Length: 150
Length: 150
Image (cartoon, rainbow over all chains, first blue to last red; front, side, top):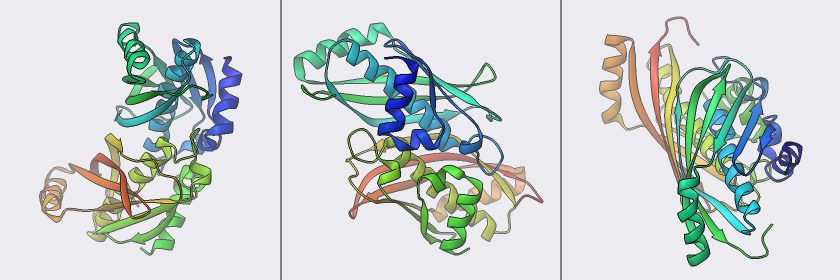
């Protein structure tokens, strides 16, 4: 999937991503970077709203795992169970969220998913503003094997 | 502040709340309930997107603390440091988030804020769909005394 295709997919299926002005900068099964402008995501202090920042990070984490499962040929339904967001420094302009996958964790995740039809994985995304990490979100996902799912 | 005034405040200062169709159902210094329709907050599974659900809960938690600080005559800047969201059951329609304040916690929070100009408080909001709790978010806020702030 190209970055443009991921942007289109997110806008089509998760309208909040369109309202936030989310666009994919990189979309591979190993790394996803999503960007967002400040204006639609601003808060009462003139910086990025925590809900927007956490949502961008959640979308990045979800996307990289979704793309990886697709690349592995594993049709699935990916559900978020818990997310923890840390807001480190104010974000005063356009920002991005970067999620990468740890191959060590993935091996047992795929094994469990294939064997039991269900597996859990935590994926972390970092929020980046002007080259610095300004926040972090860890999402605990459950993947359910679902033959025939998109 | 009336529920209509809180809705207006959120839409004017946090545009994402308007994109989500957030409306305040109750707005008091003890309890805030915010509602949202499913359509602008839907995900790839046809249920509420986790980012939307967590954001509605964060807005409710932030709002009740903001209203309480206003009611106490404490001008402040309220910043989110950490949020943890648990997604319990799928939300398949319009949903709401309810945040209440625990008076026991508030006493030392106000004392610290008055003495040190800075204090922390955790506020929890519950997500409600069809009368059942379908998720929960706890936000760890820092209030900074800020004479002259709105």
